[in-house]
Image (cartoon, rainbow, N blue to C red):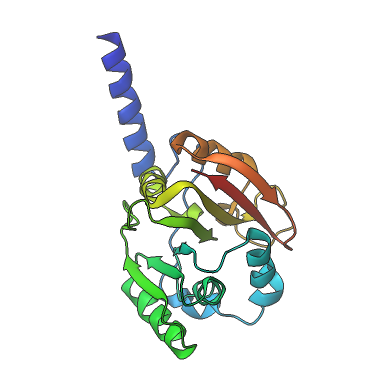
Amino acid sequence: MAKSRFVAWLLLAAFVASAQGVHPVSGRKFAQVMGPGGADWLVRPERIQEEEPDRALDAIGIEAGSTVADVGAGVGYFTWRMAQRVGPKGVVYGQDIQVYMLDQLQKNVGERGFANVKTVLGSVYDPKLPKDTLDLVLMVDVYHEFSEPQKMLRGIREALKPGGRVVLLEYRGEDPDVPIRPEHKMTVKQVRTELEPEGFRFDKAIEILPWQHILIFRK
């Protein structure tokens, strides 16, 4: 009986924390989701210098012929770069929860001639990716916006093949000089605290980018 009450208390605490926009394990406050008004910001020219996307993907390593997903893909800034790397025998799932973003993603990858991208309309609870399919899931400056991060991570874990990787790019919360609002930054400790209980093993942190962590986990 005592154990049942304790489990019920944990579930209630998790529900209340989620409703208040706070992670029930780390206590981190969730950031707001970027809406369609931010679409142009996602393709700003300065992003090349600020985030060095190609250098990041070089460090992560994406094999030709692999099946990968860009979760929270927005207008496809990383999606089309991943599509080039996996090649015509690979597949990229460009996933987002906003129809407008996916429409822009389709337009952007089409203009670049990529036919190996599949769009996926997810929800805040479920990425809606095919199970046991993915070699890698990439989340660029998006995980901190999840309002249901535990449920999303469970869906991502189900979509990964055994040993598959999940990679987060997040602005460094440890560095007050990174010019991003605090709720849009994360520390390595925060990320590990939230991902490891969901069945992900921390592999490594790569610290080569001007402002962001590259954090790699395995299923």
